[in-house]
Image 1: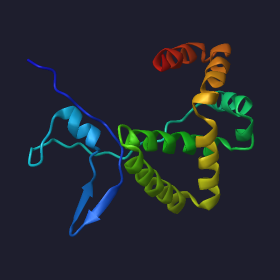
Image 2: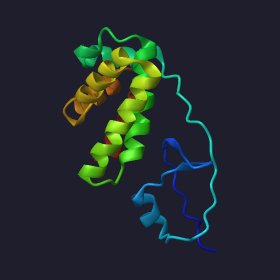
Image 3: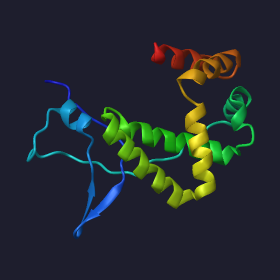
Length: 157
């Protein structure tokens, strides 16, 4: 028996008439080889913010200096939103990706305020490919998260 293909993504719930809808990314449709009119099985849940350890957050603050004044709550919220944004834009072409990012950032602002949105944008600009190797090396040097650093490094290869 063939293994069932499954796709997991985060996206915003929208209202259309009397119904609520979730937009499904084209990359997910393509991956599952679906066509308009196909029946699909849906499972819904709210995304959960993971409780990243303070010591891991401290590594980010020490490695990426502009994050030094971010509270633990702000950093956790940045990681949470970054994960949702990344999964929502995966596989999109540039124009569509930019549109989704703008809409997502508007939602972040409405939920968390303008000040947090500024911090989130700072986070996104600085936790990128350029800094990722510095962050991974700092994680690998810590005794507590050495294995995590190695695993992240392997995923980026």
